[in-house]
Length: 236
Image (cartoon, rainbow, N blue to C red; front, side, top):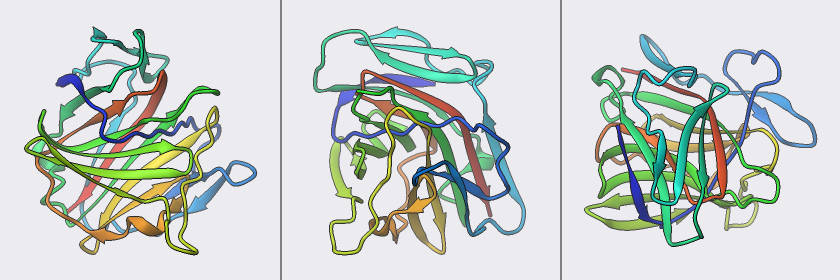
């Protein structure tokens, strides 16, 4: 387990808790009412799954106070909240995935997490993946309800790309602050895709580049965020 503070190079967030059993290979849609959107299956053959319900802390997530943030497991969720004044730092918490869930060696993978941002709070939270150390990782976050960004940090140097659908007709994130949302990061056919509430963002289809490491976790500079039901599935 690793945790720390880092300059905020991008931001983002979602929220979600399933109110009813989810159909197989589906995601919540926040369009007008909560509906399940059927997703194409890309994991073929044998797959390995990690399910993190946060009912216990057997995987060693950061808890307690660190810097201006408090980390806690409560009500089958992982919560990060700010206790100090706003600054250019963000909260980070991550764990190492087992070798059986190596994201770089997988022919395909799907990472799902449910997120909730309180009403009146800007998102500024999201996923860390492919974490090697404090200077090498990838972030997938929302800096606003309509702007998703992917940032790669290599040897402390960050480069970002907006997935907000800048070109005409491109899909944009549909985050609902104060409601339930779902974030999905998916690799298949040599490409990386980002999905928010069942909507694959038009700008997110990009060639998959090897990740620096194999850690996974969360990043946030929001006043508060709740993560639930982290799931990692890989296929070789």
